[in-house]
Length: 73
Image 1: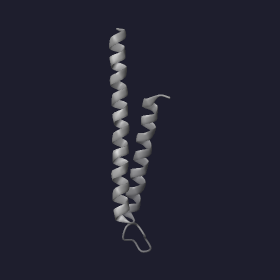
Image 2: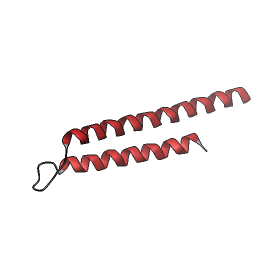
Image 3: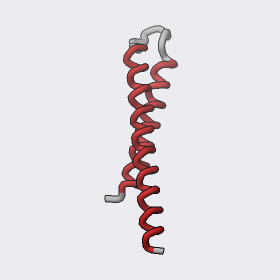
């Protein structure tokens, strides 16, 4: 399995997770809304951390690829 592709998918999933939480947060205070702001803050922080972790995987894979190409050249 390609680490970069997996990390890209993870970044996309984290972005979607953050966006969904942001949409729920916007609904806070509207009549009939049962949005828990505390839960949404935690959800957004977790999505941010997930995105950052996947970005780290991409950076590491890129560095490893560059190092391998340097060895070959």
